[in-house]
Image 1 (tube, rainbow, N blue to C red):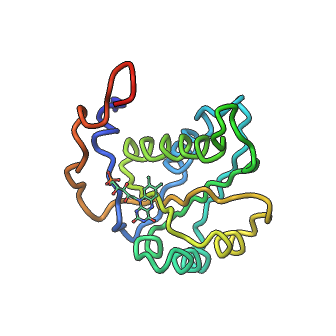
Image 2: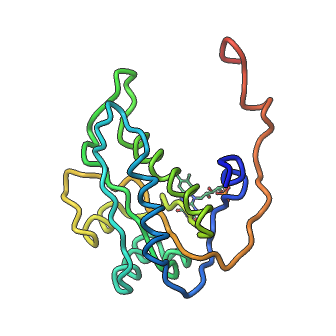
Length: 170
Ligand SMILES: Cc1cc2nc3c(=O)[nH]c(=O)nc-3n(C[C@H](O)[C@H](O)[C@H](O)COP(=O)(O)O)c2cc1C
């Protein structure tokens, strides 16, 4: 699949088939995260793959009961191992690094016929407790993964001319 096609086809999927994700598909999705770039190539990231039913239900509750989190067969938590680190530009490195990995996974998932949804609405404290993530680390986002049980929607985006300017900020 062309990258362009994967980008165009990716949608947030909020309904999943009650069907496990085959191991080879999951591994190809995770491999996309492994290959993603990171600042200084520090790779200070860990991905907790959750398939256990009870733990998924607990994560669902930690997201305020988002239905698709309860029903997705796989939930991946993206953990920053150096959450305090800043880039010279003053911006935290870890949300950028982890977002790239997550986005790589969302696109790899499309190629595997799988759907994903980023989950940023969750209790940091609760998710860390459920996944036994050490206190000093941060969970940047969760990602649901599974076979889609809904069709993609047309993208609702601003026009290119509304988000691009040339030479100086306008
Ligand atoms: C950082 C981030 C956090 C998000 N958190 C949630 C979430 O908690 N629950 C949810 O259903 N969707 C969540 N989304 C999905 C967005 O709502 C979705 O990407 C956006 O509406 C555009 O739709 P699309 O992904 O189908 O193109 C999140 C997306 C991003 C990038």
